[in-house]
Image (cartoon, rainbow, N blue to C red; front, side, top):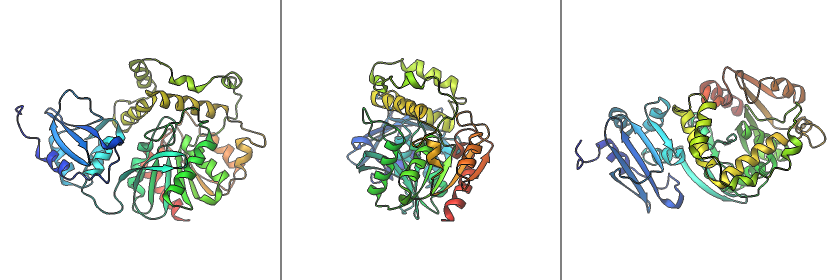
Length: 389
């Protein structure tokens, strides 16, 4: 392709369908690189509610989307082609998943109410970034530690025919506000979920959460049962029942130190790549990008450290202990466990059964993120369980 050639027709069609009301880019501006594998790359420059296509130059893009020519043609021809291609591994989205998927949603041409859309809401807990899809009873989806609303994108699609699904970025993560000095414990996050419900105009909603998000959903159910219909808890983070030898010294470590200069990005990335298998592929790669995007900012790093510290320090027993309080849980709950989960071992299922005998349980052959590792089984179980309410 010569340097003065026109952009491929599929890319022109996508940009021509751009709908600024669907996307939610900070300051209303973004640069998104669209690359044709074994071919040229083009940048979509978004500003003032308009999008234009220009040849990629040296400017740093916010997100990079890459696919071969037939896949780009499929994405342009099929209103749902972008996410289909992404799930199939034919389209890669790197760097800022919020911007990349937001572009796909804004150029899909879908106008129905159930379409995927991004919105940042002003709440009593600060600005909370969301991805929403579907219509019907409201479901709030809450991500895990170091993750973002992007980890629930498959869930939005799977549940959209039956529910209005709102995946949120917790304060301190993703594209939501990151208040410095906030406690970042379960009650703090629970307050943010209730504030989001208020901003959405919802008195009650179903809550689903993965890992930390499951713990937050439980906290809302314990503190504000009148705001919760049912709880779908995917490998939820629970208070440790084993001795915590570092609890005492950790209480004196200030997470705000995270704002100080830290280990270089290349070193952090190398550690993550070694710890997380398959970190260069599909959802895993995109999830690592989301983690790095927040962690490499001072406020995002401080929020991560503060949250991890609170998870470790949570008291298991006593009047205010987690397991004591769990026995008083009122909303119906479904716990989904991964048999290969190394972070929340399936042995916790027995403790939950003993403490909250009314809860239901589902075991799957997966690790810590059931909605990504076993999406069909997980979403089928959620639809059936939430649909009973």
